[in-house]
Image (cartoon, rainbow, N blue to C red; front, side, top):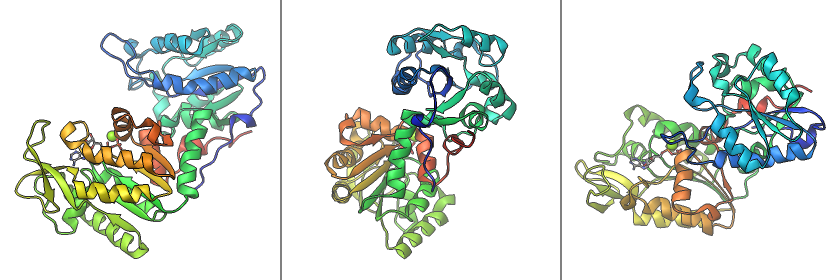
Length: 396
Ligand code: ADP
Ligand code: MG
C-alpha cells in the first residue's frame, strides 16, 4: 500500500497564501462553549511552521453536519476566537469560504494573522467533492496543505479536491499519522500483533482481513468476538451477535489458519444478566449460559492477550475489549492498555472509543502514537488509500 505524501519542506511558502485544511470539528456544550480544543491544538505546529517560513495561513474547516445550508449555530467564530488565544496571534474569521470578497479580505489581512474561512459544509458541493467548488477554494491560495487527518478518508472538495488545482503537501499532523501507519503496515518489526475489539464485527472484518496478510497474531475481544465464537459453535447467550457476518467470520478463521496466523478469541468472559453498570457480574468460561451477556474479556484471556502484547515488537490496537464505559466491564481494556505500556515495541492506537479509553485510563504515556482520526485510521487498517492523502502532490 502506498502511504506517503510530500511534506511541508517540499513547498515554497515565502510570501505565499497557504490554504490549510484543518480538522477543527470540536465538541460544544449547550452554551456554545468549546468543551475540548484538542483538535485546534493539534494544528498549531503546522500553522506555526507555515508562518515561520513566511507563509500566510488560510484555514478551511468543517463543523458538524449543516448539509449544505448556512446554519448560524454551526458558524466557526468560536473556533476562531480559541485559535487566536492558542496561536497567540490575530485570527481574521470570514463569513464565507469562497468568492471575490473573501479573496480581497485575504489580500487585506494584516501581516502575521491567520485567516479562518467559514464552515465549508455550508456549500452543498463540499461533501459531494464538487470540482468546481474545489477550484473556487483554490483561487484563494497559492499552495495547499492538508493537515486534517481525521477527514482524509473523505473525497470532499476541501480535503482532496484542492490538491488537483494547487501544489500541495501534508501538514505536520497528517505527516505524523502517515508515518505511524506506514511503519506499522509496510515495515513492521516482528512479532506484529493486532488487537481488535469494539461493538460490531461488521465494522472490523475488513480490517481483520487486511491485517491477516501482515501480522503474526490478531487478538479479538469486545462485542465483535461473540459472532466469531458463535461461528466456532460456542454458546454466546445474549451477547452481541451479527448473524449475517457468520460466514465472513468463518472465512477469516480459515484464512488465519491457512496463513499460520494466530487468531485468538476470548477463552473466558465477564458476564452480566443485563446491560447495566450495576448488574451483578461474574466470570464465565468460554460458553455463556442462558441469556447472559458477555461484556468484557475474562481474567485468563486478559493474561494471554497481555503476554502476547508484551512480547510484540509492533502493536496496533483498535476497539475496546469490553464495555469500558462501565467500571465493572473495564478490566479487559485496562489490561490490554497496561500491556501496551510494557511492550518494548512500537505501539499505535486508533479508533474514537479506543482513544477515549486511553484517556479515561490515563494511558497516554503507554503508547507511541495515538491517532487523531477514527474513521480515517480504520480505512488505513483496511488497506484503503485515503483520498485526502493520495491527492497530495499530484499537481505541481
Ligand atoms: P472504536 O471507536 O475504538 O473503533 P467501536 O466504536 O468499534 O470502537 O466500539 C466501541 C464500543 O464497543 C464501546 O462503546 C464499548 O462499550 C462497546 N463494546 C465493547 N465490548 C462490548 C461488548 N462485549 N458488548 C457490548 N458492547 C461492547
Ligand atoms: Mg467508535
